[in-house]
Structures are given as structure tokens and as C-alpha cells.
Length: 89
Image (cartoon, rainbow, N blue to C red; front, side, top):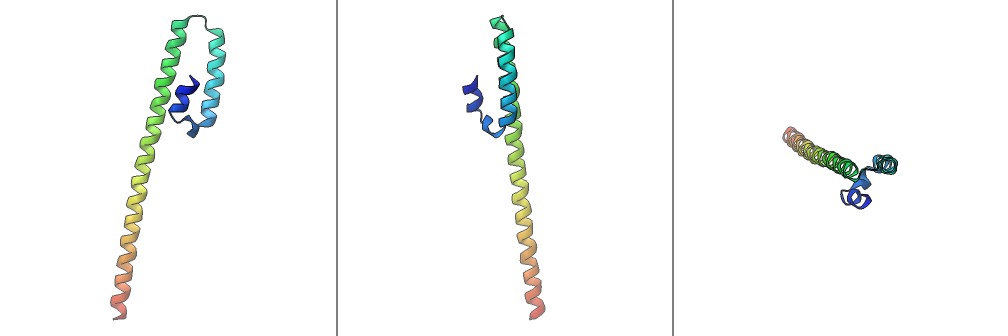
């Protein structure tokens, strides 16, 4: 399970990963049914894979917004410079 989570870039969420592994280890020690343990593992993997996907999507959206914001600022700066140059002429 550790390798699976590491492959999914859990290093971005170290505190949550640490809590999850501690709780899962406690559950693993109490659970005697292998099928139930496998179901819990799969549920955790699916849930946290979804969290990672949402986080990556949010990063993409924010980077697009920042790029658009930067482009708008550059446009405003160019417009201001042209206005200044025309006033001087």
C-alpha cells in the first residue's frame, strides 16, 4: 500500500498520508477477513486517487487563471505606455 500511495504523488500531502497510513495500520491489525481488508484498500485507493485528480485539476485551472491575469496585466501596461507616448507627442 505504501508504494501505491507514493506512486500517486502523496508527497504533496504528507500529513494526510501519514494519518491515513497510521489509521490503516491499526485497522489492518484488527481486521481478520482478507476480503474486507482488500475492499477497504481499494476504497481508499479510489478515494484518494480522486482527491489527487481534483487537486491536479485545480492546479491546472489556477495556472490558466494566473496566465490570463498576467496577459491582461501586460495588455493594460502596453495600453498605458501607448497612452503616455501619445500624450507626449
